[in-house]
Length: 330
Image 1: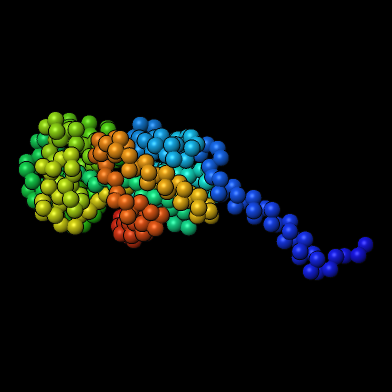
Image 2 (image 1 turned 60 degrees about the horizontal axis):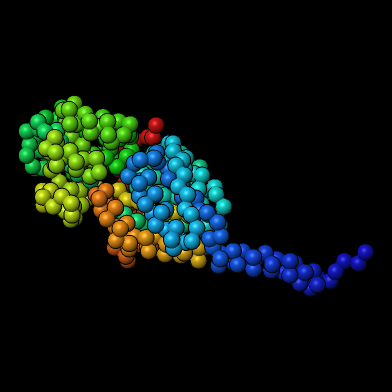
């Protein structure tokens, strides 16, 4: 049997590959053609899960397909994120990530994926600073007074936080480094049990998200000293920023964004980005998010490039702190 000429063979090979390429491009152009899965690597009912469900419902109108929320929990969110890292890069599986999953976890765990190189960013959605709060019986009435009290009572106070390596825990290390204070850290399995003990006076202080702490502050059950951001919270304008309260530069924020598996076609990423941006611009959605003490980021920050830049800057800031403290995930 005579073998085909080299040029003929190449023509045949190119001809065979062309339909596959055209098919892939066509699929990307008509995306989405079926339901999309949003993996939320946290349990149902928490702030991140709530944001995921609000966004999934809103994005359905723009995409013309259902966005199904699937909670895949475990190992600080790394189980769910790992699932998306292994998913096909076809636009039908994406993940909701946060500071914990896409900044802290690589410094806490030995992960089978790379948070920077195994994902394509889609958009930054919301950010939310923390509150420095203390039990009602704490003698100090402002942040400077709290720092002075902690210095006068080294290793006597206790701070609660949901788990090891979370933003509240890591923030407490930065707080001690910046103020020259020392106190005990008490890990909990969630923000709610930690807050219960703070209200009961079993622990002395927390650096906590406003969703959990602000209702207790308004009820007069705990004290609030400062917001860990450059601007005050719109829903609690009476609480000063850390700059105003005497600890300038102590900025700690959690944030939430969307990522897709690495290699997802850019036009698919753009379509998902448009759906998210359109949802965030809806006044009804905005009200739901603000009610959760979260801040929708400005439009110019709702880009894949902005999310990537934020993630890299946060890794550069927090990894040395986590590693110097020797924190390891459980």
